[in-house]
Structure formats: C-alpha cells, structure tokens
Length: 146
Image (cartoon, rainbow, N blue to C red; front, side, top):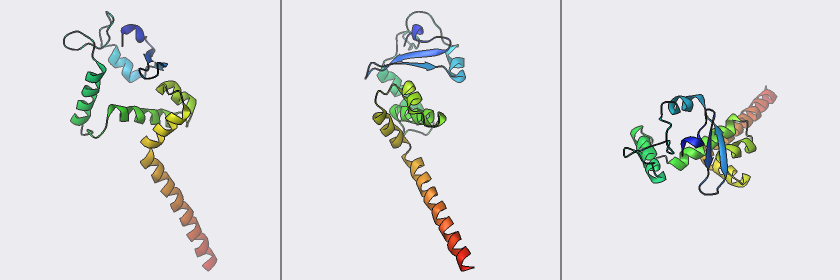
C-alpha cells in the first residue's frame, strides 16, 4: 500500500484475488495511527530495511500479535470474516453495504462467510427463540390448569 492509496478520509485497496477496488472510509482510531506514519515515497508501511512488507510478513506479524494477546487460535482471514460480520450487523444486515467494504462480488459468498463466522451466535439466538417458545407454551398450559 502506498501513500497515494491513503487520503485523509479513505483507503483504496485492490483485492488481490478478484481485482475489485474497494474504497473504505478511515475510522477515527485508524486515522490517529496513520497520522503518526511518515508519508514520503511510494511505501506506507516500511520494514526495518526501509522496504515494503510482503503480504506473507504482514500475515506473520498479525499471527504473532494474536498469539501474544492469547488469541492464537485466530487467523488474519478469520479477523476479516469477523470484521465482515461486524459491518453486516452494524448496518442492520445490509448486504450491499457490507459487500462494498469486503469487496465480495457475490452475495452468496459473503453470506457463507458471515454464517461461518457467526455460527455460534446464530445457534445461541436459535436456542433462545426455542426457549421463549417453550416458556410461552408452558405459561399457557399453567394458565389453563389454574
């Protein structure tokens, strides 16, 4: 990623797998970090040698940090899926807005992504719904018996 890909308000990313260009608004927290980085030359993130990080190195750094914080079971791809789920939930389930951030070209792919990442939460919600139904049925039976 080069400085020209980062403006004061947005980051432009081209998905390596699909070639889809995604332009993402920079959240306040990230903007604060980015303002501390040097913005000269054609490389935004430099390693100790002053050259660009490779994607493999970035993945290793992310994995290393996950291990450090006790979340070593997660992966960079898993974090992406989690972020997609957060966007989906924050937008009230707006698939178009979510796809505009993730760069997915097919709704079906994104829905699989969201379902896989949210399987436990969705399962909990399903069991809660069944519990509510059973509680109501029990209350009706108790009222009829009284």
